[in-house]
Image (tube, rainbow over all chains, first blue to last red; front, side, top):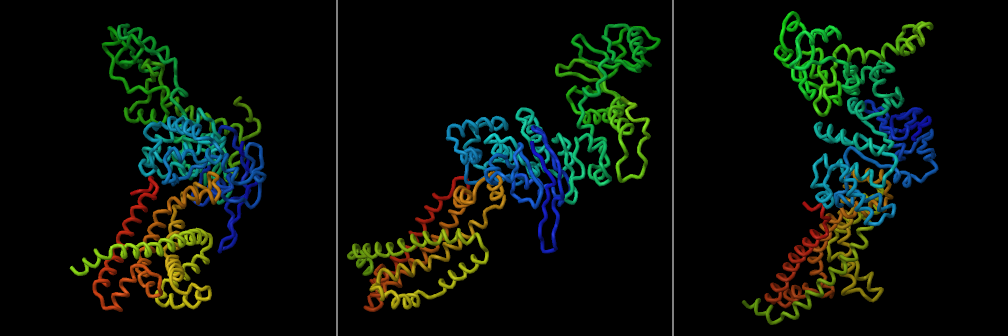
Length: 396
Length: 216
């Protein structure tokens, strides 16, 4: 959808020419969120602003939807792209409805259509239209203002959104909420989005692809998991942080590492049954579930072996269950809280669906490193030789 | 006392002179808005030109009004209107330029850069941004400049009575030349009152014209 071909920008400053963007090449597919990430002054904002021609490029080409942006009038181009900035920039002299209607009005929509669209967008942003249509920006909180800012960018239903650190000015708690809402919206709308951020966590959360910039050059363009698991060089490895494998946990859900065949036992069943099942699955514990299948307790092998009675009598307290759709980072945090190496998993109705283990999680995270070691060469700036030829493809 | 009786007896004269006074100031400041606001907008494009224009307007402001009348009279007498209405209106027009141009210029250059960025980024052309965003936001400050212009020029127009322009200054000048305290006080009171009332009236209008989203 958006293709950058050797995009370059050189500024002539009083200290000589400065290359802000150096032959950037990348391609963002339709419906993808691409986060441009990097430290201050790396060229990510410059690159972003060249796409909607707020900054004119020095050389190279930009294609949006297959069309060369040089062939389109800059102002017309910008009207086909939603633009959201960090300082929000809602016009204080206009109501929320008028703000949202700015681009539609320029495109010639009639006021009925604009009002309908404003109502639709406000509902999408979880802002009640009856209350907010007539409000002025100064009557809104920061989070509400930015939601309206996003609604304004979406008003004319552009296929592309250009966002320059849009959630940077919002407090961290609200930021999480707005990011979540935005992701949910994007699942429905599937806009092609270019998003500048300097926050690795935000990038990992929001992006389908991350583009890491340094000194005007595009250093790596890859999925968040690959950027975290296989940073292309030591700069990126440092930038994403020493805890990058923990960051990868946010990208996985509990159901991705679920061991669904975990055994369970009813409270009225015999201890011998429980012991047998524990041996079958080679586990030192078994979950006790009630008639609805909800986990109520945990029976340990040490307490059950050699004894008689029902499972329910000897069960102990259960480590707190996690939902299937929870992210692994919070699940692992829960493991640490409860000093547990495993956790039971439940679905929305609370029924026991299996368990996750520390071993299972680390093994799953390690898959990508094992695959890489077998098939790929080592990153260029480390001096080790490539993997031996006869191992290639052996994993498959 | 005597002055009050004088005012009561000559109410229609005072009213006539007041209308004359208002007409000079009103026409001149109205024209000044028509010239000053566009100039103020135009100079936002170029810093050097802005500095030059504001400097010239400030210099005009420093010329004492009697001196300005003195300059205008021989020039305008070539057209046959050396005294009276025309030189008064032109002088008031010139004195109004600085407050109006400067306030317009300041208001527009002080519009939040984020708004300019957002407007540009969403595909507004410069005139659309000016018309829909910058001017509405600038109106309160421009009106404040108009108020300053009006209040100053009500005073200056009082002096224009000396060149035959009429207005409430007539009472003051006659009061001085005829040593008539009643006319003097009546004229002085009337001019002061006019200035105060005009200021309040324009303040009301300033509040009315301030966009709803900006009102404090």
